[in-house]
Amino acid sequence: MAKVKYSGVRESKPGRINDFGSTGEQIAEKFKKGCLKRADRSFAQGLQCQQINSMAALMSLEDSVFISHSPQGCVGCSVMAVDMYRVGQIHRGAKQVKNARLFVTNIDQKSVVFGGESKLRETVKLAIDRYHPKLAFVYASCASGIIGDDIDAILNDMQSDYPETILVPIHCEGFKSKVCASGFDAAFLAINKYILKHQKVEKEKGLLNLFAPTTVSYADQKEMERMLQALGAKVNYIPFYSSLEKIKKIPAAEASTSICKVFADEFMQTLWEDYQIPFSHTVMPIGIRNTDQWYRGIAKVLGKEAEVEEIIKKEHARIEPLVAKLKERLQGKRVFVCGGTGRSFAAAALIDDFGMKLVGLETPTYDEDAQIDIEYLNEIHKDYVVDIANMQPFEQVNLLNKIKPDAFIGVPVWAAKLGIPTTHVLDGKRPTMGYDGLLYLGNKIADQLENPGFNKKIAKHVKLPYRESWYQEDAFKYITSNE
Image 1 (spheres, rainbow, N blue to C red):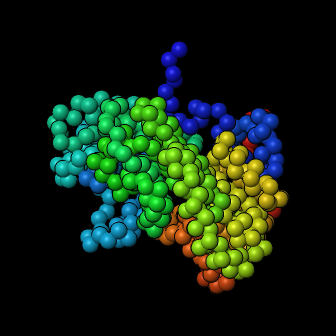
Image 2: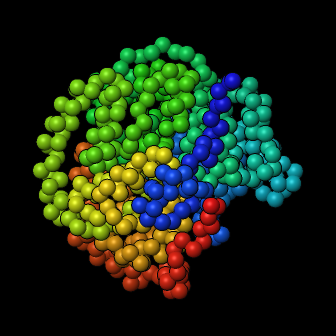
Image 3: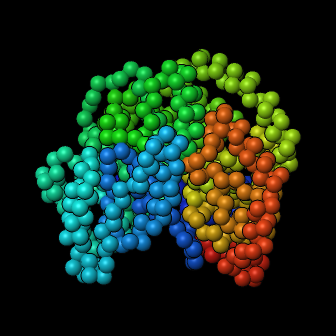
């Protein structure tokens, strides 16, 4: 029987949950028994779409243009990726900072009735004639998917007119998946089909693919490269701030790893199936335990297990006295963590390095990898709340108002308006990963706790858009179980 290829929709694999609210102990028990079923919400406030993840994953590629075949509103949240792209250029020493070359076809009511093919053709022509790129990525949207515009056929027809530009359609229609990480998979599947094309290439000794999302800072990139180069690896850092030439080198690598397992885990499996590239699938390297585990994982694939133990020993000797000082500042503080599936669990493990207490955890998806992390957390922390939610700020503010943590680690907008000291771990501008990132992040958390005045002033002058009665309700009342 032929092997079924991965579709790019993460719900196509069993055991991935996107709506649930409970405690760490209860969610682990239900998942282990196989009775944690997919649920839904009778009310939802905002939802991260897989299209924006497909766009953000590639938006810093050199010599590229990006075309969203959508209404204008679909590119609204690309502002975060554009901001990180601009800041990243400055950190990398760029003298002239550029914006991403992003176009939108502006599908409107007329397009819905008569189709949006002409708008797509005009926009592709405009983008290529203006910038003469090596790559042109065209993103499908809910609207273009519902209309039925065949972007593959349109781009295939136009390819002969632009032989110097590779036209790449990406099927990231938002309605295809509630698991927003499916957007990463859609982008990588398109790269494999239209750029790599399953072609076998000669292996380059020592070359290692390092996959990284947009929310990884330049300081984190340098830290990861430092650690991998200590193992003798030559790093192909992709796709962030990458190029067509570096993308084409992917099949030449001897091994692959990812800074965020949620970002490229499915693609690394595809690379193993199509190009026999072994990979390490472990954790995000935030905190001592996770950094050690991430480091050992890739060292095992590279056959450098003895060498990595010597390096880890030296790193621990360097950082443990500094971590001990941070622990004196943070011991016993109660913290709520919010972030992507890989980052939130990694940050939750990190706080144990500092003697902090986990009281709440919010993450968009729960799966087998999350179960491993939650079982580890349950050994250390008791009675903490878990909210499996793709966005849904109304649930977050309800929980924060009830729990009243000392600190919040994650995307800080809503917590800051409640006056809680916050530390951002998703802005892609500051170190958070590896041994050096651990020290920076610990000092950042401690500084916020010792100087909370800014957030407290915000809370006095900003009113959140929720009635007082909502804070008395069960935060999970709108989650409808399918059990």
